[in-house]
Length: 197
Image (cartoon, rainbow, N blue to C red; front, side):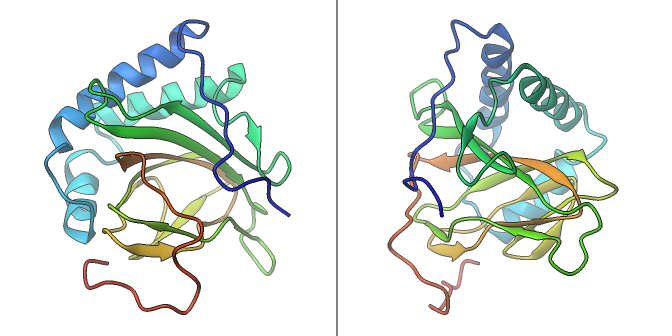
C-alpha cells in the first residue's frame, strides 16, 4: 500500500527561494525550542506561546500553503495524492540537528464515517514536534497523543508510537524530529506507550 516508509524527496533549497525562507523561519523557532523535550508539557507551551493568532504560527502557515501551491512541499506520494511527504531539511547544525519534514494528509471533509485518513504506523525515538497547518475543509484535525488537534501544535514524547490520522479536510503536519529519528519498524499497535506520552 505504501512506498518504502522512509522515502521522501528532499527539497532543493537553491531552486526554491520560498523553501529557503521556510527553513530560515523554522530555524528561528528551533533556536527557542532546541533544549526542550517533546511531550505534553511542550505541546501545551507551543499552543500557548506559538499557537494560532501568533505571528510565528501564521507566517509558518502562509509559507507552508505557498509551498503546496508551488509544488515543492510534500511532493512525494506515499499513498496517492491524498497522502504525501517531503523532507524540507535534513538535520544539521543550522537546524539544531532537527529534521524538518512536511506531510500532506487529505481526508473526507465531513470527517464522518470513513472520513479519517490513517498514515503509516511509526515511533518517535526522541519525540516529535508537529505544526498542524489547516489547508482546506471546515476544521481539519490531526490526531496527536493528547487527542485531536486542529490548527496548532502536537508534540509526542520520546518513545511514543501511533498511526498519524487526519480528519475534516486537508492539512499539513510540518514536523521536527530530533536527529531526524523516526522508526517504522520498532513499534506496533497495542504496545504500551512510555510514561512521557
